[in-house]
Picture 1 (cartoon, rainbow over the protein chains, first blue to last red):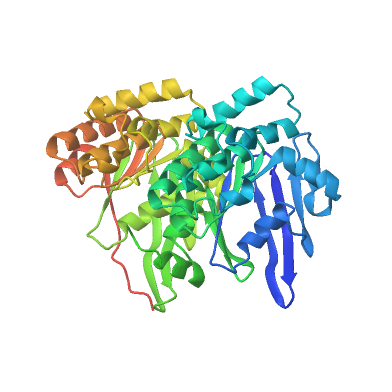
Picture 2: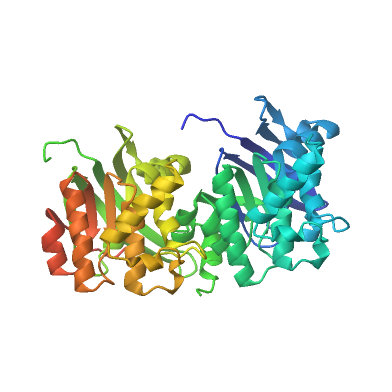
Length: 258
Length: 234
C-alpha cells in the first residue's frame, strides 16, 4: 500500500465560454488500477480525459504523472514537444470511433508497426512479426496484416485501434467510450479482450463510459461526474450497489436490467 | 481454536438507505456487535427482511456503513473496513475476505476454468498452477470436465452456483461471507458444498453465513447470531 500513484490529478478546471465544463476535479490512480468515470453527456468526463491526455489545455490544475524514468512531471505544464514525446512513449489513447485512432490509408500491419517504429525499432522483419503477433492477440487473423482497416468490420477496427494503442506497452491508457459504437455481442468480446490485456500487461486505465455495465466489468474504482464535478466515488460495486448521491441513484435506477 | 485472536470484530454497526427519489430513509441495521474467531461459523438467524444480506454486504464493503467499525485482521493487524480507502478495501478482498453471492455475475465469454482461477492469477500465481487448482476444486464440486472450457452463461442455476463457490473458495481467504451458497443446489450438490465448507471451517477458516435450510445450518453453524427486530426510521 506504500506504492506511489502513477497519476495524480489535482483540482483540474476548464471553462468553455460561459460553461464551466470541469470544476476542480482531483483523483489519484495507482499502477494496475482501472478507474471508470461515468456521467451523462455534458458532465465533463470527456473534457477531463482530454486534459489528462494533453489534448485540451486546462485553465487550472495539475496532471502529475510518474514517468518510467522516475521523476514526476506535470503534463499540464510541460512544453509541447516534451509532452508529445512523453505521451507517445508512455500514454495510450483509445477513441470511441476507431477511425479517430487509426490511419485509414495504411495497412493494419502499418497501423501497429508505426508506434513501434516511433519508439525506435528499425528492423522491418521484427516489426512485421510484432504486428502479426498483436493482430492475433486482439483476435484478428494475421493473414489480414496487409489489408486496409477500411475493409474491417467496426468491431475489428476497434480491436485494431486497441492493438495500436497498446503495442508499445504504455503505462497509462485513456479510453473514451471504447465499446460505444458496437453491437452488444461485439461489445462482450471487446470487454473480455480489454479485461485480459489490462490484467496481463498490468497497465493503469482511465475509462470514460456512460455504460454502467462496462464500468462494473472493467473498473476497480468508479467516479460519478455531474455538471463538471465528482459527486460520488468509491469501489465500483459499492457505488453501483449502494449509491448515495441523488444523481448516482438516478443513474443506477435508470439502467434496464437485461 | 476458540482462544485464537478474533479475525473479525464488528462494533456498533449501523446501516440505512436513503432513497432520494422516494424521499425515504430505511434504517436496516443498528448497533450490531459481533466477534468471530478462526474456525467459527456464525449463521445469521432472523426472518426475511431483517437485514441479513445487508449485514453480509456491509462486512464485505459492498454497502457503506453509516456508523460503527468493522475490524478485520488483515496482514497481521486489525484494520477498519468501514473506513478503508478503496485501494485497501480491494486488497483486503483479494487476500482476506471472500464472498459467495447467491448468483454468479457472468463475465461474457470467459471460460469457467479461468473464472475460477482468476482470484489466484490476480495474486500472482502462475496460470497453469491456478488452472490446476481450479480444476481440482471443480472436480470436488462435481462440475463435469466438459463444461470447464465453456463460459458459464448457458449453465443451469446449480452449475453456475458451483462455479461461483469454486471461485470464492479457491483463494483460501481466512474469512468467508456466505449468502445462501446452497440455495439453488439439489440435495446431493448442497451436501458436497457443505462438506467442503465444513472442511475449510475445521481447518481454521472463519465464516459468516446465511442458510435457510435447517439441515445446512445444523451441519455448518458453530453458533447462531440473531438479528434484532428492526425499528422503523422516523
